[in-house]
Image 1 (cartoon, one colour):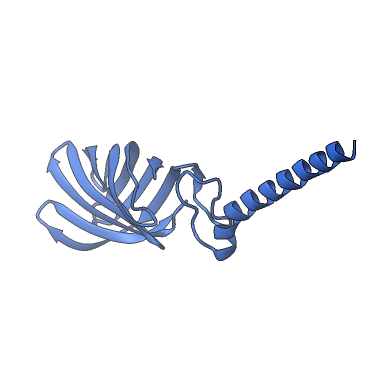
Image 2 (tube, rainbow, N blue to C red):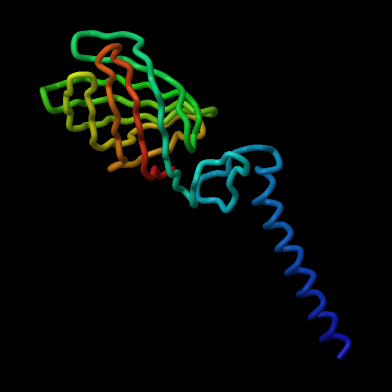
Length: 174
């Protein structure tokens, strides 16, 4: 009987030690302030992007300003607000009277997320609008494995100064 009690106690101690070790391995990157690796159970706490294991949900918007213009290409940048705060860069090209393409890069702390977009384009007297989709094809740093397609890409262009208000949203695999 004493032998069975020792075995049961040993199993409880081993189970508690295993649980404590697993908790330590999951929370250690959080204590150090690091991003959790994709697919791990840990995630960054305060201000962290909405995410599940291996997925980042972008919901970014920005009021950009024109940095240069070359023919029908607008180069813009400005602060992003949303799930991954940083700078948004957009190189938007008007390819026809009803279509635009764009290269989009979001540069939060720790890396960048980049892709290409296509969108329909509607020109008004004071403002133009665009709406389409974005495919994420490249990431750097903490976002080096970022990939995704079918993200929403939309916005407006103020015709008086070519300033762009842009919105990007959707899921990105990491």
